Image (cartoon, rainbow, N blue to C red):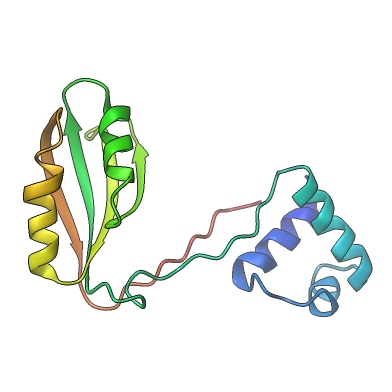
Amino acid sequence: MDDIDRAILRELQTDGRIAYADLGPKVGLSASAARQRLQRLLDSKAVQVVGVTDPMAMGGQAMALLGIGVDGDPRAVADELAGRAEVVYSVLTSGGFDLFVEVVAPGPRDLLDFVNDVVRAVEGVREVRSFPYFGIHTHRFLWDVG
């Protein structure tokens, strides 16, 4: 991956639907060259272009990041929780928690019930700390591509 590839990725992070006619000049290429570059990145599986939904815009009114401590294999807990509609994503970690899980629920009471009745009931869950999001929450996934 070279500097032009990284420039293409930066532009896509800002606008994933940018037209090649706009993308090319922004990265110093023609529209067709930008299309070929992006296609090469897609074909190599170095890049995926996907749609990301905003759970709050889809009816969720309460979100939280859950830090979960696990006795045993955290992968089993992650797998069980990943099947739940309330779970946006789960990620295994090393450090203070074994697992982070982002959840969305219709309201604060639903979020509390999910944590207490579902998450705490999963075999192996030792500890759950909830970090709720208040106000408007928008996901923005930006990774430094160089």
